[in-house]
Image 1: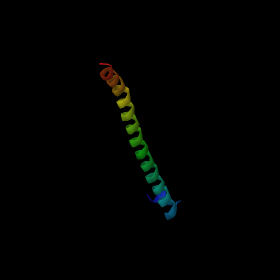
Image 2: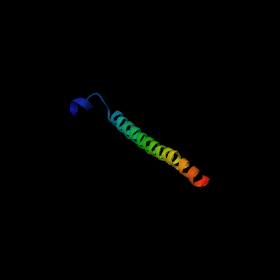
Image 3: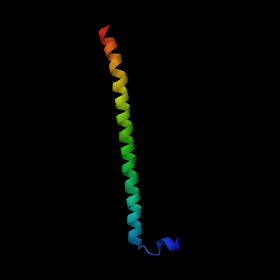
Image 4: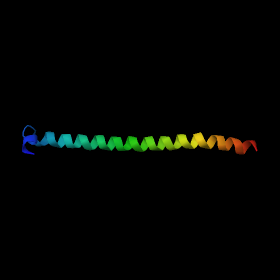
Length: 57
């Protein structure tokens, strides 16, 4: 660990850690958004034909 932190100051190490946390947070939000959009598309894709068949009867 000493060889890794030898060239970096404490502030730089904290900034790198904060950057990793920020990227993880953004990716988590994007993943939730992607799942939500996929569920909506599936509902529309399978729900509309079902509604059309029910309405025509």
